[in-house]
Amino acid sequence: MTESARKVLVLGADGFIGRHLAYGLRRSGWDVLAVARRPKRLRRMGFDTLKVDLTASAAADPAFWKKRLPGVTHVVNAAGVLNASDNTYQAVHVDAPDAVYSALPESASGLLISAVGIEDTQTAFAQYRRAGEETAARYGITVLRAGLVLGETSYGGSSLLRAMAAMPFLTPVVGRGDQEFTPVHISDLTRVVVNMLDQYSEQGIHEIGGPEIVTQAGMVQAYRRWFGLGPAFRLRVPVGLARLLGRMGDAMRLGPISATAVTQLQAGVVAHSSEVVRAMPEKVQPRGFSGYLAARPAGTQDLWHARLYLLRPALRITLALLWAMSGLIGLTLSSTQFLPLVPDAPVNDGALVVLARLGGVVDLVIALALLRGWRPRLMAGIQAAMVLGYTIAFSVLAPVLWLLPLGGLLKNIPILALIAVVVVLEDER
Image 1 (cartoon, rainbow, N blue to C red):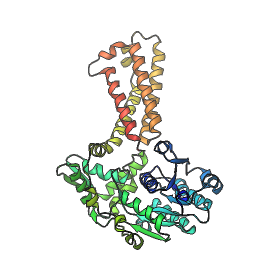
Image 2: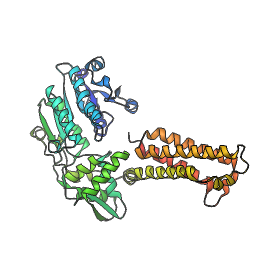
Image 3: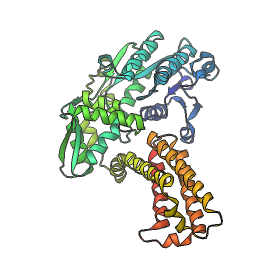
Image 4: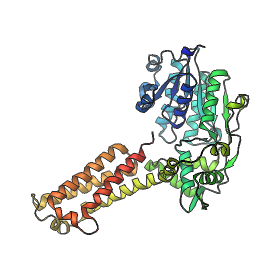
């Protein structure tokens, strides 16, 4: 195969694994077409991109893909969702990949990145992952099941591990913390994928995991030492409580706190590299967890990210409570208590009461949207507009509010800063 013919389509190229695979394939000489729902940043990183929402009906139509894949000879499917509706699971794991595979030339080949442990698990994620593997098998697509994937960057479950390690005074673990894992570094996974596309054509299902078995508690403690933090008390979170927190996290879209993440930590993930992987050159073989953790020091950004990761949902909940209380006060506070604060208002008292009640309703809607995690960037803009609007209005109606004890309108300045911090932390991609 000539260099010019080495064109690979990467599905899910904007995910944690997908981005690393896209970079690794490009570094190895492949022409990469990166597919993502929001490909703007990938395009700025120098990739040819294709903007596709895999949940859209068009993505399940082979004709949609045929005219968009000129010259593509290989596909690497790294697309997946951990927490979603059945329709979304079906679209991302089965329907869209099916359309892609059928649109490729008969001579094309490819690889599906799947997950270890799905054959023994009855979660929706596992069920649709298995369905995705069956779809790939019909087209001769090789399946590579990966264990727990870690790296210099982190996302989802790997970020949660770091956050647990960086907590002050204690390090929580799910259950006893003795669940076993065989973590594989993302760069090692990338090298294996590149090698499989370059050198191997074995179909079927293969596994990849690191050679070192480490417990959940062992990983947390190792990360804590990597951060340079001192010993901390190990807090064993009962599995039932952890699952409840995970379900609450799913309902509120809290990201790191999810039922799937809890299930993974509770069950452990042990992957034994298949013969195909073990037969690869020594330089391609995955390293052990302690080996790659010791390969570089933790930087300031690593510790900041770990400490802020659980603060991210905490700050969003804090804002939600602030808006909820503001809304309740706006709806229930008697006019005799707030009208004296704006004695010279250019509108009559009745209009002020109506405005207060309407403001209360809007505040409660904002609180509900924050608790649900709905459109974080849009909600940040709405919150900032509301705070600025309140600030300007009350500055005109009652400038004395800037001089009230304990802050008064001054508190709006740190609230705006908090909104800015939250919107930054919500942007994971």
